[in-house]
Image (cartoon, rainbow over all chains, first blue to last red; front, side):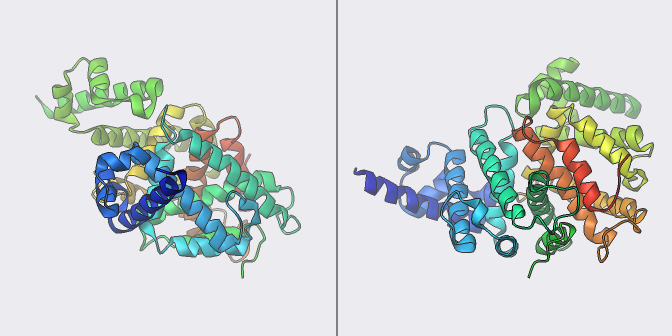
Length: 193
Length: 193
């Protein structure tokens, strides 16, 4: 198989995984279900993604790229290009896709355990996202509360995003994730549109 | 067996589980390892805790009770009795026990999936902790930023605690969890001791 065809095949498997996750959530998504959707045997799919963690990590990577392109008009990996308002819009959008948010929440938490296959991915992703968030907040330095710095606030902002996702997934009637993030921005002195 | 003896036995299993978690983390903790520690067969242990999730939920419940008693001088379930300074001290303490924090992070995230055995436990725990946090912040109402309410800020404060735990577990050299929580308190206008 040529490299281009292999890349296409990987992309269609990831697309199928997005669909299965949206329909069945994290727990209902199996390699077998994704293989069936894309017309491969499970063995055939495992040629591209040997484990569920490998496949889901690729799904989350693809989501990050798509979100950056769509909300930040930025190329993959350039989290710093997103504005605060674009990020707030992304939180609104996440509130419409519990399946993928669930997948992110479960896999990122699972990755903190020893020798987890996705540990390095999440370690590096958080380092990158903290750097991007620091640069985003840098553009609001004048508005930030006295005595605080973008470097200090970046991990806190990311914690708010992650922690609100968890509470919203457990209790969507009670926890308004998008409103919570906008309230947090006002704590930073930033007025979202 | 009398009820009292059954309660004692459950308590010693939970104590043994704490030890195993501290030594081996979430992933290394199995019913078999805990059974061995407490001198039971795995079958015998499963009489008290049929699944790993049942046992770990009991561990986390016991930790909540102990933390409230120790840091908040409060009885089980009364999260509202804790002061902001006691909570900051608890975050300091958590930074010394990655095993149990890891267990909390993994299990709470896992519980968002459909039909998870610990879903109801975490759903109810978060509702209770939000109510307690709201009352804690109520005692600082004068200090809170204009236009914000304790009800609005409570889920955000809990999100900061959870989200910083995740980042700290992935990258303890880079993320200072206790300092992050204290910075968040200054965003609320609250000066911790």
